[in-house]
Image (cartoon, rainbow, N blue to C red; front, side):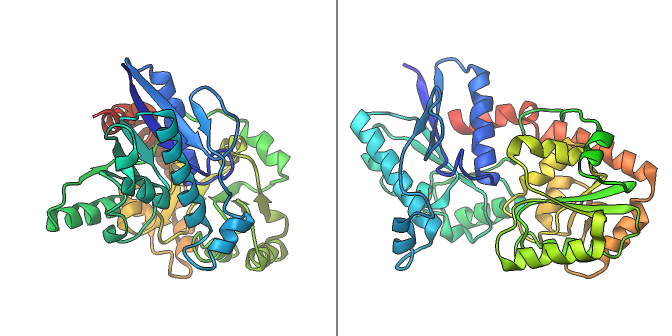
Length: 371
């Protein structure tokens, strides 16, 4: 009898975030491994039901029912994840589906399944991939095994488990991307496609917002750069504040500003036209866009915090982005040096292949799910 491993992600095939990127990439890579006597299954809320991909229809986060219930408890995601978890539990009970391991990335889904795990056939191990920043006490009742993708969360959770003498396993294992090398593109052709005429391109990828991704900081710093630079922001803009930020950039940078919204399959092309990538977030659960930029061979600038230094492994490229002028100064000191650009590009490709590709991490992930 073969082992069965379930990977759950309600938002898959509907939302483009780190959660969904991780689960889709993990499942696709595991399928290709052909592990003896082992089957992998992917559970999602919608999308095409391919082989070993099971769609569990539940209310979506923006549906009336979730909106109504969120007035009294939790938020929209709380209710979608709760419904999804309960639907999965009922699926297993009714169909008598036994899984050795259930891997979940959405917090409320993991918490619900762990709470009712005794109802599930067999004694499945619940693995929670912790992809946000919060206190360990918020997650301790979510799983048997905590898969931490952030060194900060790992140290906090490990300390909490040891201090409270809990029978929990904590594993530090970063996110990854499928391919070791990025696809090759014609940089000049892509720049022409978006009418970019400047020598250099500064790129940031993520939702256009002020609070989390801090795109206003990127825009304000780009305004101080020379006319050799074009700023490209790739991400969805929602709300008046986002529109106001984009309007400022368009007004003050003119044709040296480009805002792009593309599908997941088009994102690698956007990295290919850039010279430097910046993520201005001061706090992240991880930041898969960092890996995408490393894979593309881009020099990268991040905020100076333990998580980002751990991912990038280059303290000199982590600066205080809470201080006005720091990004501008960093780029003026370094990005005009072609040798620096080439050195950082080569280093990031090498670091990605060794630390963040499926080839580099496959055995660690197999151990996480199978042992």
